Length: 281
Image 1: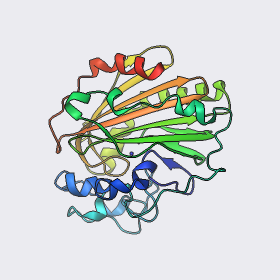
Image 2: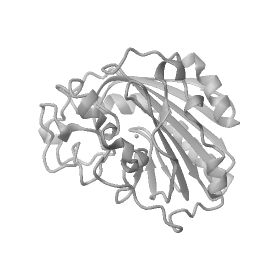
Image 3: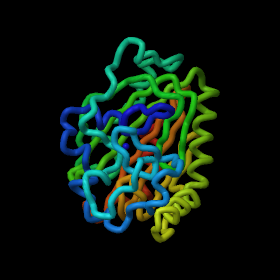
């Protein structure tokens, strides 16, 4: 759900920039300290290259100079950096290519439109943030999208202090957005294997399960259940719900999590077809 780092953007940028997030941006410390027990990566992995790179200011995974302690601590939080303001949105940063800010804004969802809203009681964290994306946008451990020229992000928080994030990525044209959507399809098709390999690398049971829950035209949804590896995900048992829709030259991505340590899972993915219908309107 982070700052723009040297070669990529991560889906949590708005979480770092919203003042209201001074507490919630460190959700893994407050809500997941127990869940991270025993999930610290092996020390041997500390210097290995890893695709879930956290911002350099907050080493949380094997890219740091030392492996995180096995004892749950602030150092083990995922890469939501509460003490770093998001980059200022300048006129240059607002350049969004052919998609334009209006096209990005047209894809925005509200808290009332999010899945499982009765149980989750979603609230917006801050106004949408529009900025220039980096060369790569990393949605999760399985999907990296390239070539976006515009990026609007909206963060939400549930009554259980769990996150939902909408990212709308603008591209120069519809063909580029379609190619990006196909990249998402490919990454999610292999996501179970990717997630299990990551779990094995970190010494966890390979329990990840990923299934496609809905598809309609150029819109698809997935559910991933797993004992997550700390990094782009908060650590511990959880369900991740991922949605991708191409709308013209915009790729709309929506993601929300259910953490077992926060509350029992309440969402039935049978509702994902309706979620996709809402994202395509």
